[in-house]
Length: 66
Length: 256
Image (tube, rainbow over all chains, first blue to last red):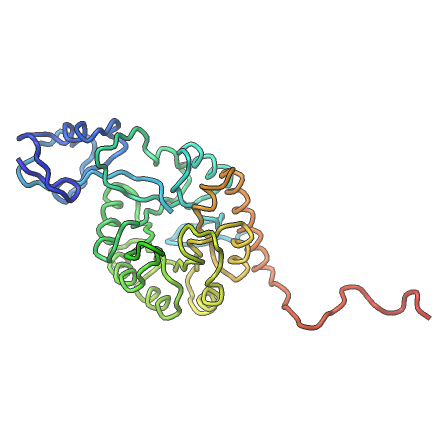
């Protein structure tokens, strides 16, 4: 199914969880990122949520900046 | 001393603010913050696209710090507002540095879009610290839009050229009853001193510290410079004159 990940369309497995998606993205530490799912920022405890078709997901981290 | 800077209801004693970009490591950044006793730091947000990340920069920022998330990467007010809201939802607090840049060569901020974003976010309760191209009318517009401070650039980001906009910054300091924080372009401690002597409330630097040979010592040097400049401003600096005036008595000694 297609979802929108970080602004781009992405083909992912049906019923994929946020947790699996983060693994696919190569995220090694879930505490180092936060996830916005359909406009709502999830807590780490909610990463088991199953994605649906056309869901909008942003995976973001805080980085150094001036 | 009791000379605190008050922003968004918080008392700040160190008027040197530090950006966290470009440090060789998070650990080095942490040391720079700790040694220089910095209290206000900025961070940015980025999308994670396939690069494995092990470290969370927030783990390296001492707990006493006020973290101001910036909206870097925003090209218009809508994007800046969205980034600020996401940062807040992620638990970052409500301090935000508005940075709206659509010019890739000189990285100069877009004042019009910055003013729009300031108005929206101030109404939502953010402590809004807009980074802008120094201009008196725009400083007034930012103030009227609810900005907590105004943050004029000294020179373009990362150029280390110092206070090229000094005359306009002085006018803004004289005319705008908000803390004026010089942000961007400050390359050496002497330039930070100069900004503080003008009456600026604080100085924010990043590149000059992060890319110095010894970032920790440089952060301390900036911190001391900002403090020296502040002391001089508060003390009242003696006026410049065009004609010499002796500081020692010139008469009555070894003369006929």
